Length: 298
Image (cartoon, rainbow, N blue to C red; front, side):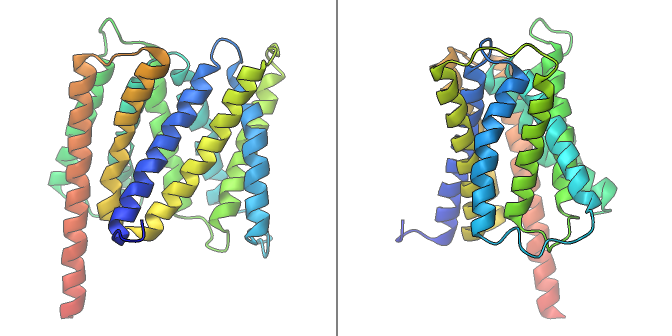
């Protein structure tokens, strides 16, 4: 890898991050029917939070914490909690590839939300791309069709919750390290899962279930690591399109683990969402280059 350019390294790390995220989803989906939703979140959270806490401590993330409550961190945590519930509820009840495909509309919704909340400039081309991307999602979920169910809407709800998470992250006090924010979110999700188990019957956990949940936690932490490495090595405009490899991994793993075969509307809708997202990234990159040129000239 030493012979590769920085951008190629970033692209590889982003691809690995998407693979790790999809493996995390696959592992936790494999426990469906044997381990309840909140129980799975709680048990996975114990390992993930312990490892994340150790990383945060080793990197000094617990040092010099502010004495005030950061409201943006609270809102970020709310988005993380609700997004986790909505997405995993859907994941337990629909094909992996379908859930992953709907989730790919998230960059488009982030762009739209940033324009509304932060008054960021978004031209008609990107607004058109967002509208086309949302049309792609409608093709995937097919409202009123035979394959439509409430769980498709649950993934969409997860998208909006995760957008809240991402937008709130931009407002968090910079004195808080990324490792501490990750630890705080992981701990909050774990606690939520623990509280949820109090209201449902605790299911026996087999050795296979523990292996699946441990794998889920390891893949989740690996995904965080690879995504951070991707941002450090490559240009965002170059590495971001590789996020869409999640659709490829979801299709492969969905077939291997669950014998799911994507149908034609799902494939067409996914291609529309990906094309819209890539066009939006292209426009953002082009505007960024133009702004840099203006700064240099001035």
